[in-house]
Length: 429
Ligand code: ADE
Image (cartoon, rainbow, N blue to C red; front, side):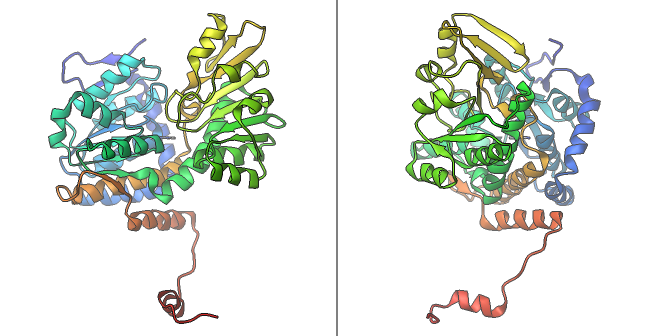
């Protein structure tokens, strides 16, 4: 592998190949065209410099969209160190551009193994970040468990995803969270759009790019009917698939049923599905007993944050080493009874492993929230308790307003009478 790692302990990068920078440059500019909200924030940051001299440590998917977020932060005066939040999601050309053109310290190589993934996080920690940006909470967890001495210098952080927010809340309830972190995922302009339309489209994109499968007429089993599951189900139906949903939450299951999807336990769904997609955020969702009743040739993919939803060890056990690789992101397990089961993208986020993640137009809103939440925290440094904080409503609404304006959509405003009516309780039937 031709990677460039600087040798000193103060290494400023570990990337695949700096020569990839020109390709990344073009693709980052292409994504920027679909990120007008973040672009406007970047322009303001470059004048106001809210992050002047601030060391930011970011553990995010290293994509063209993330590059645009990083450029907004550096325009605002931040000094950024970046590592990947998933071993398979890095776009190596983007890593090269950020390092070569923008002085960002980048530690990320697509396909890095577990040890290198964590050594990259540790390289970011070694820069002594004053602010953390996480997607899945691996950076904060590493600081907390291995480098607690770094906590004193940290003023705040942000977290991008559902799984990361769950981990942070668990830290908060155990009393170990040491600085305020904004749960960007909880903004309406994040999860209603990114999780639903972003994951909905990019998950199917990843499966199609990995396999070239025709979705029309297939039975697609979706485990989990949160915002990501809802989005995937909607798009899968739109592509002509029969959608089956599995859930553990009665309200979500009811919603799926009333949306017209078949709802059943995985035990039954396993025998029906052609394609399986896990998006529960939980562990061991597809297990040996399910693999045992799947059709031969079933495609199995995950779009939840961690690669724990599909029991890969069970697949390995069942196949006893009989495994082939017909395509880059397909591992075909030959089960003893003559059937095959195809695991896509090693069970990692299929939209980022085999495709490019969510489109820039939706990451525009997620990363506008990231940028504004970071500014919010930095402006209030030292005044907020160590807790998981929601994105302030004014930021959420501002992101929606700016996105609507960029789309050329205008809306009504309350009349004075309507405002008065909503504020009073006197008028009834
Ligand atoms: N998460 C999902 N899609 C993404 C993207 N395109 N960039 C960064 N993080 C993402």
